[in-house]
Picture 1: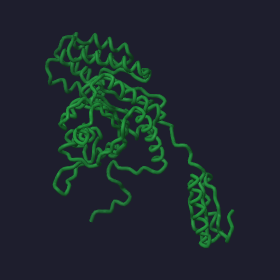
Picture 2: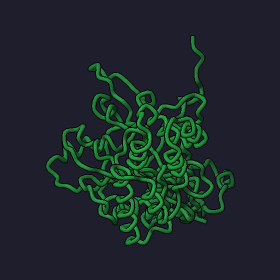
Picture 3: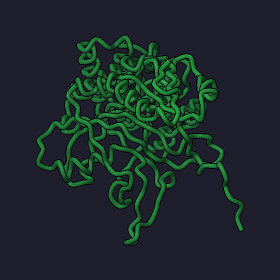
Picture 4: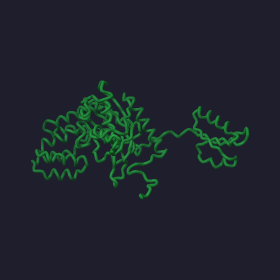
Length: 393
């Protein structure tokens, strides 16, 4: 017989204690207030989705999904992200709603972890989706909103890096005829393995001029001046168009007045097969992992029968909690009413009256007056004793 697991939890799952959850809820409220000011409406979707619909459309790989069989024999998954479920809703229940559609969510998602990874398998996100607008201004809106969200959450030092999915692909098409190498290059940049990237560049049978251009790609990270440097690396076609898009995007972001929080990164590669245009990641000081990520995904909605351009982002709440000092205001002074059985009615009526006045009230039956001292444990609690007939002190 297997040994009982006792207090253990499934791999990657965790408890969130009241003090941590209070801070998370406070930040969620701050983000919600900011996002709704931009005209986004909240949506909620089921925790379970069919694998054949949402699961296959998700940006999460199959091996990281929690799969189950329902009683009808269908394979279902715990939602690995929120973008695919929202795409399902927009293509079905919202099929008659005209574009653009602005939605946001605050939800938990599930991604299975390897035993040695030490990461959460259930985590919380706040995110937005802007669906049905292909313009650069739509990309600028979600990036500017991402900046506003981080500011409203009290993140004081951060940068949002902006790139384009087509720049690397277009540059490789110009320089490396053998497409079998392209995926290796993208994987190295996705993993930020710049040593491996340089070694691959140096091993290729290409002209020295092309080799220099590929090495120069790694230096395309910085401010507005990087746009012209990126343009000089390209000949025409896909990469050149990506540069033009980034230039137009930067001009729109200048109008928002947020460029001090931005930097350009032309070698930024997020999910390898998901994003189709502008991509971005947000980093805070002293945090090695991105706390926000997003970009344009113009092909997803077509999988659900309603082709439409779309862009959005998700904030990883666990990481946000690590980098902000914002926290709820201290609770109002609580009230503890200690009472003996003969005073029960009087004590509970007083508790009800105090709660109507907005106070936090605890009540506790005690055996006799001598027990009262055992319950006085916190400085933020006022104590009223109702331990004698007609007596309150």
